[in-house]
Each structure stands twice: as structure tokens, then as C-alpha cells.
Amino acid sequence: MSSAIIDEETVVQNRDEQTQPLSRTLDVAISLFLVLAGGVFGAAGYLLAGFADVGRVTSWVASGRITSTEMSDPELIDAVYAFIWGSGVSLTLTGVMLVGAGIAFFGVQTRARRRFDATGIVSPSTTGNAILGAMVTIVASFVPFSPVIGGGVSGYLNRGSNDSAIRTGGLTGLFASLPVVTVFAVVTWSLLGSATGLTAFILAILAFSLIVSVAYMVGLSVLGAYLGTHPSVVNAVSTTE
Image (cartoon, rainbow, N blue to C red; front, side, top):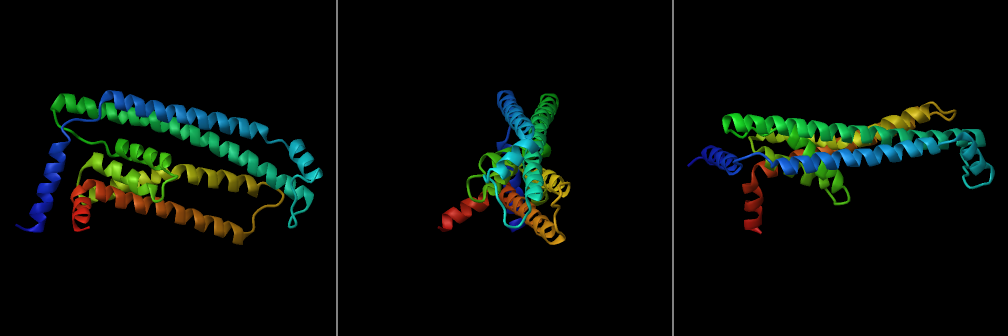
């Protein structure tokens, strides 16, 4: 029997194992978690942005609580204020995105369940599974190579071909990268508006770091999705060990 036939049978078997969508209770729980987490992030960002005050930062610099050997006092005040304000705004935007992700997840899962009720055929939602995988990546961010875990969850739920694994894993990595991209964009924009500004060299370093971070998230998420789509790969590795 050729490897192509074996792979096809494995995919069919994997699809048959998933006889129904995620339960409605789980959909609601995940959606509520995302919405509540978004509310916490949004509230924290709002408070942090409100905490940013030029007078307060000026008093910190004047009292010596914040010092710099590279910047003058006015430049340091502008930079610290811009950083605090930008961090608050980025947290608020992250909260809004989490709320939107919760609403979107519930919507796509509800549509998938209605399709299942009407046809009896499970049609996994790539977007919904990618959102769930991104949430797992963010929650497990303290674990090394957490994007592999998030990608694995999305790939396992999606159950498809190699192309499907790449698509699902890529979306998972991109969704998980959105908070990082948001923080980078807002903080950089706020610093550009300060008196200190950013040199082209520093901006290039920051941009390169962002690209590496996104590539890391997407690449490991695709790997995890491939392993999740083809559990036989993990079983084979475990057997050889």
C-alpha cells in the first residue's frame, strides 16, 4: 500500500473521529472568556492611558526617580509620557480585539453548528479553530514554544490536508501576533510623536524584531497545526523513542 493511500486513510479516519462540532457550552465558555479577558485588558489600558500625565512624569524626573544619561530632561519627560500613554492605548486596543475575537468565534461556531444540524456533516471552521488556537497560544505564552501548542489545537480541531494545516496554523500565528503588533505600532507611533523621536537605526531594529517575532509565531503555529492534523506523526515519534 502506497504512502499516499495511507495518508488519505489517516485523514479520512481523523475526520470520522470528529462526529460533531464543539458543544454549545464550550463555545459559550470560550467566547465569554475572550470577552471578559478583553474587558480586563481594555479597562487596564484605559486606566494606564489616564495615568499618563506630563506633570506627574515631570515630577518624577525632577525628583530623580527617572534619569537618563542619553537624554535631556525635556526629552526624557516626552519619552516616558509617550511610552506610558502608548502602552495604555495598545492594551485598550488589544482588549477590543479580544472582545471582537470572542464575538467572531461564537458567530462562526454557531454557523458551523447550524450547518451540522441541517446536513449532519461536520464542516470545521478554520477561522474559529484559528481563534481558539491563538487563545491557547496567548494563555500558554509562559511555556516555551507555546505557538506549537496553539497550532496543534487548531490543527487537531480542523482535521484536514497539509494545505489545511498550513492555512489553519498560519491564521493561528497571525491572530496570536496581533497583540504584539498592536503594542509595537502604538508605542512606536507615540514615541515618534515625542520630542526625542526615533532614529532610523533604532526603528529598523524594532521593525526587524517585530518581523522575527511574527515569523516565530506563524512558523511554530504551522508546525503545531501539521502535527495536530496528523497525530500519527506524533505517535510515530513516540514509538521510535
